[in-house]
Length: 594
Image (cartoon, rainbow, N blue to C red; front, side, top):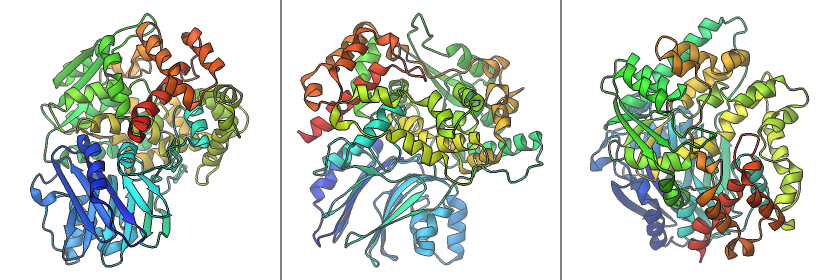
């Protein structure tokens, strides 16, 4: 929905508004409709708006409530804001706008730090309470909206992207060795609060931070996902009906809470196809759908049009289909990488970037299917993990890690070698309380941590690069909580996503339901050859790469010699993993820091 930034100084000085303007300039693509700033003593805010709810100037930000002495910058959407607005009006609050932003201000005044517990949606926001002299920042339960920060003895600076933080002033851009281990072993997932840069951290999902003018920080967790049975005797049909009702409500919310048209990103897979089916089931007519495809490789198709076309035909959607040649992928790849607020290796990042460019010409909001595989056990590796013996860490690590620790030590130079940080982190996440079985542990970790910094972040970055808001119904709070209580064997049936397949039967074409699990394919970034190999070789043999001295040259040369022989357990290119990280650093850190 927007881009936010701001700074709180601890030394009784005012932030430089020029720094706020620089951060806002970087965030401009996230909010092309309005720019605004605010300052009050030691604090300053900046905001770039994508107008979706209450399109009038009354909803512009930063939003200042003169009566309550509260200022807000907010990115996201609160789906239950109409109900909260009525409740707050009942408490005597008066509203000067008609959107969800002002509801957050009143909720903060009424309920303080606990206000986030009442917000149902995706959000990252900052509140400055002029009376209390406190800065309060919060991130939604599922981490759908990003919020980065840097803290020094002089102050606390935050923004919707790392690039904006770097533009706002000096930041320690040295590489975090723990994060580097995560980056290269955990499918480029660096769990919050870390990032690849030592000087940048990100707010943990479902957490808030209260920062005072003397530099004290209080952090709180306001929500925990419990993967436990609340009713051992519930029948499968009852579970599936509960999921169906939660999904219908989630899709309906994400359609109705907007003052602009809402489309669907239709990949041709079960998840996005089901979103179209649920909208049709809800009586929505003239559904807008969008699909993208790429060139085939001998090993893999580059599009799923054969399936998305069937969905279009079934529901008579107003469809837009885009075919992207490989030459366009490579040409536009640098743009996509510059739009990544963290380095992301998922091959579909460029796909979403190029699709979002076209979709943004038609609509401002889309629904997307991210989260269904993690919430409902759709990936093939869940089945393999379930069949394994050993500790939870051993069962997970064997089928998910991109490279074992021994190989990591061969990958990076001596200064970045150390403990097996990723195993330690995953073991800690799996062992957290409130999960009944091993697969409950895995799916909860995936839903609350791994997905946040892989597909969810990827979709936010790539769509917001074009001022397009992506809404993810499968990560609705009620959907996630219902699925987490469901016995995992019900989700694993039918090869995974059993509840969604049952809901879809009779609603979607059987071919879409029964097809093998597909991915958003960009084959050229998996089967690296030709000009794509030349591109990656140039990056990894560049002076900048050699001077950075992250990777051992012998390992790099081994990958360059036979790139297609070195794939991860999840079928990603190990060469692309290294090239992407180095290219991201050159594009987003070196250029800004120089």
